[in-house]
Length: 66
Image (cartoon, rainbow, N blue to C red; front, top):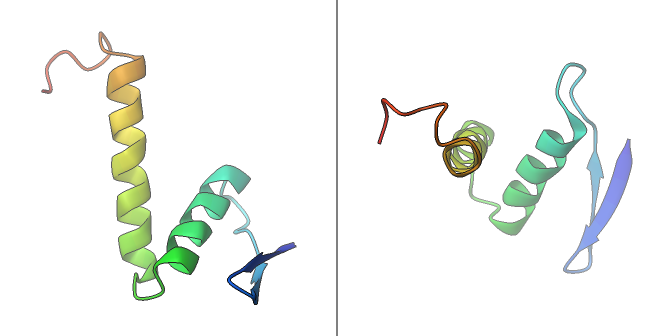
């Protein structure tokens, strides 16, 4: 468990049991920066960003998709 401070407010982070810490923290930051973003939308954004990274890092892996 960790705590962060953003714009004078403290937030407690409790990572999910089977979720990587990096994923938890990146999604949490998305929700802290944009408080109106709901959790499912934050997860969708995170997975979309990860797909973009994979396309750049491993272009031959997904040749059939553009």
